[in-house]
Every structure is written in structure tokens, then in C-alpha cells.
Length: 632
Image 1 (cartoon, rainbow, N blue to C red):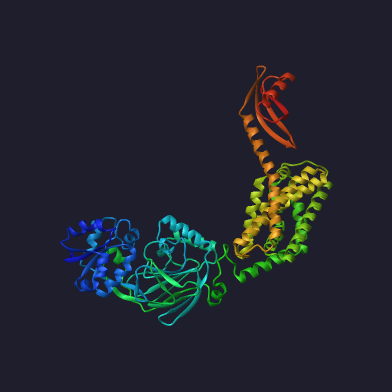
Image 2 (spheres, rainbow, N blue to C red):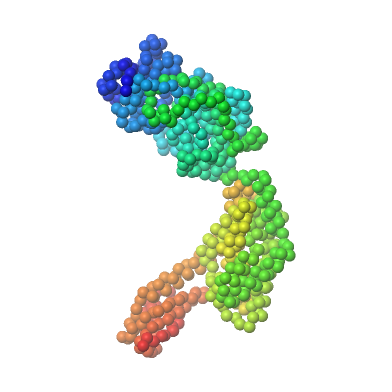
């Protein structure tokens, strides 16, 4: 390998420590050290005497140095400090100073392109607008990582869309909108490099413009996450991203007045950007040249399908982007028409409500889970509930009224059908399938909420609407109504109230979840019927209390049963085993049912002592019922 015979070493305060190593290099190169400020001040006198320069300076001086190297046409080698991680990464260098010095002093340079903006050179990138959290260079502050992050988060919640007018060298005019436009010479490392689906190079004779145009803050977050975990197999552009490649551009922005460089410099808009081919002679690593191959192509590339068109750009201009995105007009019309139809009562709905309720009732009496699931599949109650959710969100009075009437009629039919059936049947046993629907808990509310999310999501995409039947099985709307009707037929008010509370829990949980889901999916940027939605949320909070009590009772039952199963009692020298323990809550009364295993008969005194021993384990008073089995 041949090395440069004589070179100037351009350094600053931070790189003074490298002087000794560079001057006493082992490659036989004579080094002339010169401080960066002295170099700039005396460039007229010394410019013609420099053939090669090694530069180790702060990033904000790089562009100025490159402009001098371009004018004077001397070759350069960049020697970054260990702290300058971005430079090390972009140049494919290592943290070993001697290895990097070896590369910087090689007599083996190639030329790279640079971007000129109003007679200033752009080394890495320029930014118009703000693209927070996309790397330190894009937050427009030169502070610590923490301060940069705070700045970025603050700007994140005030992002505005602006219009960009871009004219390429070939006269192509593109008008679009976005939160930021990034002008790149190249990017082969780091966050931005994951976005592109084409080969880039500092020797391709092109400038790349990246336009970032998220439709919402949530969309922007999804973009950041997807790009962070994006693989190298970049076949398609991420959503909300477009790019243009050309040899030159004229750029104008509606809101931003300046383009900010990767340094602290900025230039007023409108501005013209031109590629300077083969501008700088650079000594770089073999890996750098592998990644920056010479590419010759006059073809311009315009990829803006993911961006707003000219008409949309004018509509979005200067507006702050919402947290939730807007659904497209076509998609909204299609869904809205479907939900309007779902809110209308028809003969099919009435027949299916009666049939599904009767089917569920027979399943409950027969204690058959399979029959009950069949009834859930037939039940049509989910569709008007989803319509009601959209009506509340959009303040559509007619949809709210029609959906409410349809739900109310369905509920009344279900109660009448199941109560008549229970009255006509010759027996009145409460089966385990009925009992499971009398004491709803917070777990049932959680099921309702997630079912509401699934229902709204399924309705929003016609290709998965068929999954709505599965959602209906998960939330089980008709069986609780059937149990409530059976309670009316039996005259058991507690049974009616418990089962109807479960139905009402499902109803409110689905409505709340569906409202939030529709908003997240972009079908309304704001809640238009705020009073109605607030009322629904109050109902949700209101029913949460009895559900919490019921859930707490369930936990207590479990703890009591578990505790008793772990105890063995000796009463009057008689060994008693508790084989099974169940707790029944009736108001403030707790009834403990025990199955006891004994070898000897128990008398009244034995039972009294056993009762006292058990009662000492608990803080609340228990009524104990026991069934005794003898072990022979």
C-alpha cells in the first residue's frame, strides 16, 4: 500500500490530543499541523501548497472545510475522534486511531459528490420542517441527548402539515404536503437508511429528497416503530413516506422559511439544490467504497404515491396533524351506509332474536354449552350495538334513535320469549349454565370491552366482517337475556337482576370500546356527541362497582375454599377431612357448604367445636352447612 508523502493535519481544540500520534505516524508521511481557524484565515496563501489534508474537527466546521477542499482541489482523509460516533459509522471506520490514520494517509483516493445550496456545501443532510424522534440530527438542536429528546417530544405534539413545491432538473413539478422534507446526499447507515428501497451512493450524481407525511400522530409513531425494526430487505416504502431523486431541485415550503443543515447553518427558502459530481477527493475505507459504488444514470425517480396530492396538500396546509388519523372518504361512506342499514329493524332481525333466545333458553335448561354457542351464532344483537356506537361518536341522531329502538325491541322480545318458555316448562331447576350468568364480575366487563374492539374493527374492514360471528360468541349477548327472562318466569328477582346486569355490562362495554376503536381508526377526528359518550362512560363507571363487589366475592370464595382444603381438623380426638368447600354469598350472608370425610360418627358437640374452629379462621361470620361421608 502506498501512502501520501506529505500531508497537512487540520485540528481543533478537541483533537489536539491526536497531534503526537499523527505527526509520529509509522507510514513515513511528513505531517504539517495547522489549527482549523488559522487554516481558514490563511487559505489564500497556503491553498496552493496543500496536496492532501487529514481533518479532525467538530461537525459544524466540516461543510466549510469541504468547500475549501473543493475549491483548492486537494484530497482529504477524515480522522474522527472516538466520541464522533456518527462520523465513524458513516465512513465505515473503527474506534482504533491507528487503523483510521492508515486509511486517511493512503495514496488511494476516489471522488465523491456533494450537494451545493446557494454556494454552500451540504455534507450529510438538510431539513425543512420538523421530524422529531428520527435521530439527533433531525431535532434541530445541538445539545445533549436528553435535551434533544425533550425538545423532540415537545415538538411532537405540535406538528403541522405544510405544503412543499418541488421542481426537478427535468422540469417535473410536484406539490405535496408533509411535516418535514429531508435533503440527502446519501444515507447508508443509521435510521434513515432503513427507509429506502433503492441503492444509494455518494457517487451516483443524484440528490435524494425524503418527504415525511403522516396522517396522524399515531401514524407517525407506527412509522417510527416499523422503521426501527425494519429489516434490510426493503422492497417497499413505509406508509406516509415518499422520495424524489434528481440532479437538482428548487424547493419552496408554505410555512418553513429556511432549510437547516446538519450543522448549525441555515439558508432561506426558496432555494436551489444542485449536485456537484466528483467534488471531493477522499481517502476512505474499502467498506466505504463498497457501499458507495459509482452509479451513472440520468433518470429521475419520483415515488410520491404515499403522499397527499396537490388538492389534498391545499386542504391539509398549516393544520396540526390529529392524534388519530382520518379514514378515507370512500371507506367512511361504505362503513356508514352499512351501519345505517344495521340500525334498521326488519323481519329477519325479529325472527332471529326470538329463535336465538329460545335456542339459548333450551340450552340453559338442558345445561348444554354447545346449544348455547349455537344460539350466540344466530343472535343478531351485535350489529345494532356497533351502529349505536358510531351514532354516538358522530352525533348522528337518526342512527342513535334507530339503533336504540332496535336494541330495545330485541331485548323485550328476548325477555318475553324466555320468560314464557320458563313459565310453560313443567320444572324450575336452576342449572349450572344459568348460575354462571347470575353473578357477573369485572372479568365479564373486560371480555365485553375487547369484544367491542374486535366488533368495531371487524366492521371497519369488509374483508374480515365474517369474523363478527366469532365476536358474538365471545361476548354472549343473548344467553344473559335468556337467563333474565327465566328469572322473570320463575319470579326470582335476584336471578333477573344478576343476569340483566351481565347483559348491560356487555352492552356498555361494547359501546365504549367500539367508540374508541372507531375514533382510532379515523372515522371521526373528534367526539361530536360528547354528552352522550360521557353518559355512557358514567354508566361504565357505575356498573363497575357491583362488578367489583362480585369479583371481590369470587376471590374471597376462592381463598376460603383453598384455605379450608389445606386444613385438617381434630375434634374431640376425631380426625375430620374437608373434601370439598364451596361458598355461597346471599346479600351479607356467607353460607359455607362442606363435604366432610370422617371415620367416626359426629355428635352435636363435635359439630359445634368444628364450627368454632372454622370460624376462627375468618373475620366474617359464616353459616355452615355440612354433608358427612364415612370412610370405612
